[in-house]
Length: 487
Ligand code: NAD
Image (cartoon, rainbow, N blue to C red; front, side):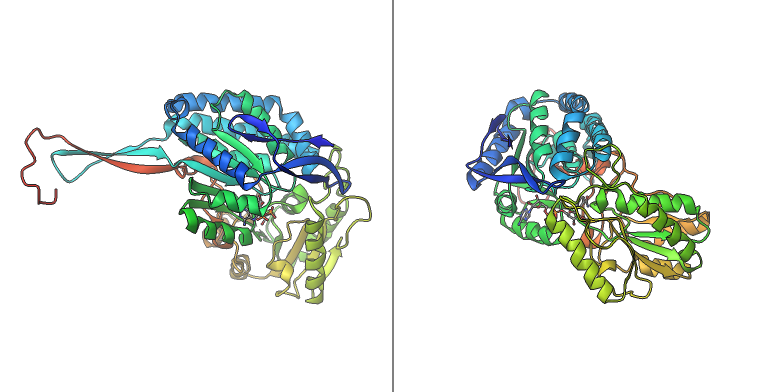
């Protein structure tokens, strides 16, 4: 079996504990992964703290940090095929997606490389004539980045990129499910020329995550994962009072009006919910379709869903591969059973595929007579679409906003004024109009409510890794007159 190592203080090393990683396409172990002990976590955080203070990182100009990030971006692009192959092997994410996504991950690092020397302070028009006051933006310190297994290279890029651009150092805890791409990423990072300890990559389960996120030397926790774990993260932050950014799950509405370009909407819905085998936080997993076109829309959707090529994740022809874990597959089975008992009707799919590995077919559930079905409120993180109908625009808005989440949303209409009304009315961090699942390093990404807080991507994300220092400089040569008056 292949053996992976953790990366601490610029050195690749074993952990005293290990665990087997399963190949989701076969369900069999294929590699041994290090499981970071509390001592490993402490070493990683200490290394990050020392690197944060050391002149070879703290003393670098922002432009020089940007150049290192650019070099990293080039190395990622160069090694993209290997990274894609490992992510596919360890998580089951299909090679067609990992190849395209990792090439784009390099663009995220390029974006933050360019941003490094554009993180500016400001000068204040202070209300005292003999004072000059300005704000410095300084890096927050050691960042703990905790990521789930889906799209780890991407989800870590939106943390590592802005954190390093701002001058922080990072301990990244890869997911215990499918950590191989992150441990290989560490090898690429190591070639880029950063000082040792600037990035440390460890892996392990909830205990490792808890040790890291409660660590007294951690200043900020950048977390992506589920809402339940996020509650632990917030409680953990009571220990070290670290700031947090939380990118959590979703139950995003995909709203189709009768005037939409139907073929475009069907294609966007298919990729919006079945891409990444449904394991996407922005999955458009609630189809909210106008009653007048429901039958025609569902017929076309079913036809396309049933034509999806299900297969081995390393086959370029595959469009839907296995789920990452048996647990994910069981979640889908249980949630569908509950929803059917609550009145949902299975239009297609619905039961696991009989073959080795964690396969589950694209599934459509008609919930138009089962508005309380759990499938409309619970995240599947699998290839399952739940359908409800509406008659009026107000109904569409009410259904779209009837969720504790608030990550993404899609609106399909050719009516410009309606599109603008919907954009204002929907409570979500992202509204896609006549498109879905488009992302860019330039655009902020994140949600409200149970979908978390904070934004990744864009300028704001880099600012979130800084703290503001107010500097007061007295410009008068006169002696300070009276020590007891407020100045
Ligand atoms: P998860 O919450 O179970 O785990 C996420 C990470 O947290 C893992 O690395 C895990 O080891 C760690 N962890 C678990 N318990 C911890 C604890 N007590 N303290 C510290 N760390 C701990 O999530 P998952 O099941 O791996 O991933 C799926 C979830 O992630 C879904 O809800 C999905 O929507 C969400 N997600 C969100 C985004 C986004 O950007 N909004 C992107 C991808 C995935």
